[in-house]
Amino acid sequence: MNKKDFSNLPLSKEMLSNLNEIGYKEMTPIQAQSLPYILEGRDVIAQAKTGSGKTAAFGIGLLHKLQVKKFRVQSLILCPTRELADQVAKELRMLARFKHNIKILTLCGGSAFGPQLGSLRHGAHIVVGTPGRVLKHLKKETLSLEDLDTLILDEADRMLDMGFSEEINEVLSFVPKQRQTLLFSATYTDEILDISASIQKDALNIKTVSTEVANKIIERFYELQSSQKLDTLINILGNFKPENVIVFANTKAEVQEIADTLQKNKIDALAIHGDLEQYERNDVLVQFANKSTPVLVATDVAARGLDIKELSMVINYDLPHSQEIYTHRIGRTARAGAEGLAFTFISPYEADKADEYRDENRLFEDANLLKPVQSFEMKPQNITLVIEGGKKDKVRAGDILGALTGEAGLSGDSIGKIDIYDRQSYVAIEAGKIDEAHEKLKNGKIKGKKFSVWIL
Image 1 (cartoon, rainbow, N blue to C red):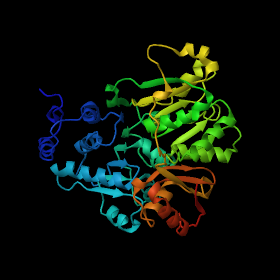
Image 2 (tube, rainbow, N blue to C red; image 1 turned 30 degrees about the vertical axis):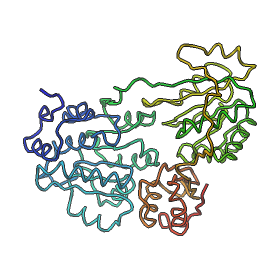
Image 3 (cartoon, one colour; image 1 turned 180 degrees about the vertical axis):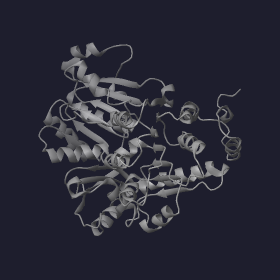
Image 4 (tube, helix red, strand yellow; image 1 turned 90 degrees about the vertical axis):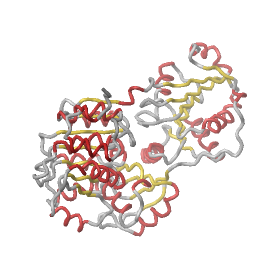
């Protein structure tokens, strides 16, 4: 018997027949590992990316127990963007074909509020939406969740990136305590695990990516004259083309000099060190975290507390003062099963100290073997908009997202991380859309108010 066969699950004949008709021939790893527990009513936290089959995993679970004759909202699925919510709703409608009259409703920012009110008056079994718009309906009492038995957070890490943690917490205050909670995330950050601990009960942890090999960092060492370091750094970036990289140096002056030189060589880089004011530090960290600059040059002290989920490369421009610092620096790459690259430069006067680092797994290579790269540029994926309004002005991520996807007409996929501070908010916008987003927000309103907006 095929263990991946849906017929191994306690599903109705009608549902199995529909799964077969729509082309669901066998379970994906996330479905095979999570569905038996989801069908038992267990809380589940699962690491799963888009395309893994996660929508069918939670969709089959919630449809299996849905009471069609009970015309109340029984399941709520929160998604980070309107596009994902539409995609989830579309797949759920296909999965729900086995039974008549299952009503699935999307509630997202960027769409008119009036038609949503009309749809809600007609009732729904399943609501798929973005946190800001769902919360707005809950506060206006146009949506009731008193009969809810399943809550799903889809792409939870992306929702946190977009600044939705407050909205999610508020939505939770409207949700019955007795419920099944399913949490899906592409990465397992401390924040995700904290959320799971606070909103789930005895959650089963499913990590289909655990079948991958253990985190692997390829460590390369180059013995160099000081005069060769900058050229070697640029050659490494040109040869390996990392999406993002932290370059560590031991002094503040050196950090600034490296960043300035990279900028002159058309490599977008920012420096962070102890001489920066707090607001300057925020500006730099936000831009690196939201992919508005690909290179961060830092001292160890300045980089403390920096949490980047997916870092392609670490370069030690100077040999660290200790092996403990070295381990901490390079440990920022190769997270979540990815492969990471670490490069370390050794000056002639550090040769004796470098012997401590030699082992069979580390590569000591000749920097001259790196192919010189001509006309190489590194440009950011996103550019950051700053809005002169934040928590103290009652500005939320959902308000900003709604303004950008509504009147401004941007796609949710063009909008990256949203960071909201007391008096300012930062929004990552796809580089090619930045002028359009800036113009629309500058001339438009957020929550009915005008705010100053500029490009960082």
